[in-house]
Length: 116
Image 1: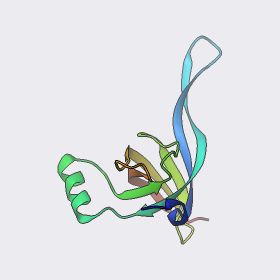
Image 2 (image 1 turned 90 degrees about the vertical axis):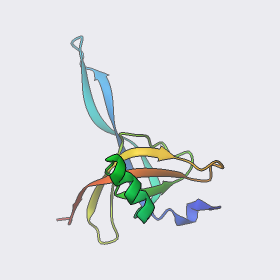
Image 3 (image 1 turned 45 degrees about the vertical axis):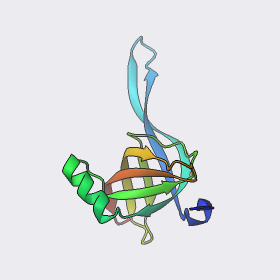
Image 4 (image 1 turned 135 degrees about the horizontal axis):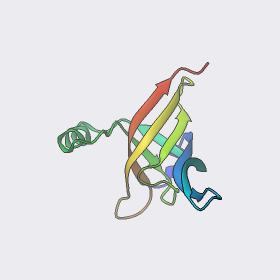
């Protein structure tokens, strides 16, 4: 899969839980936007779905990314589909082939709603 960039047809915001000092000696956890990445959202193969189901995973989509995309397990990816519906995906894991020409995030679709 050389030249993955031309296949990355969607912009996705990366949201991540971050712990910050609350100014009173404690800490608070917030969810903050940390990056915007390009990606390609696909359905998993039947084999991937079977493996996910057997392991109790909620793997609903694969998102292909540039190999150095700042995306990790637990992140939320937010964007819109081709029809303008808002989508949120929870990242279950991120893997790369032995030659890092792309990263593949195994995700669960957590929200999809029409805009407006």
